[in-house]
Image (cartoon, rainbow, N blue to C red; front, side, top):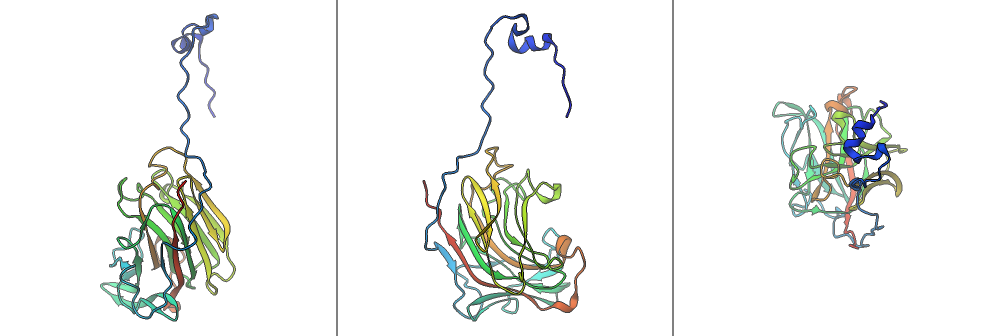
Length: 284
């Protein structure tokens, strides 16, 4: 911390005679910008949007689309995302997203990345996903949200909400994170929380985010893990006043998922999802 010495002459420019004992009034400082009050918002009991995966075949086309391709997705990932039932299939009450070791379009792995964009877009709400994560070094599953309209510009300007993120070389550690222009991982300012979850790759766990105008709060199995509060400092800090949609995917390798290499013997590796439920926030 630097200590500043200010002369009486300098202060005169601000207070018009304060140093000489005169009582000329000084204009008040502008109010400190702050975020909204926490109104303790609650959520409806019945989902406004959900997929219970109580059918068989490809994911419901009325609820899910796909991101396709093998561009590396900004993270040097190794998989090619397809819309094949070989990589995303619903059966026995669950969605299974499977990463496989197979060649496609110059990539050595395939997988799937489901998106609800244009079919499930939301501003605020409770988002709960019951899922079992894939095991093995090199997997990088995520349950997350991206802006639908990118109103504040490209990533990270318009924000990202990671409801659950996991890397296979750290098998029982789960991450909940938000990214914005002011707070994101490439400048090491991201807002994040981690928690050790026993048997994350063997049992189903409930991953949840409650998103309100005041804060984004994250939970695992209903235990409060994470909070990012709206500071009221504009979109660089809080772009979360626009519509977002859901993504479910299993990446292979990449800057984070592949930081300790990829074990080719673990494939196929799958994330299983029991349900996805979205509850509307009750306005106050």
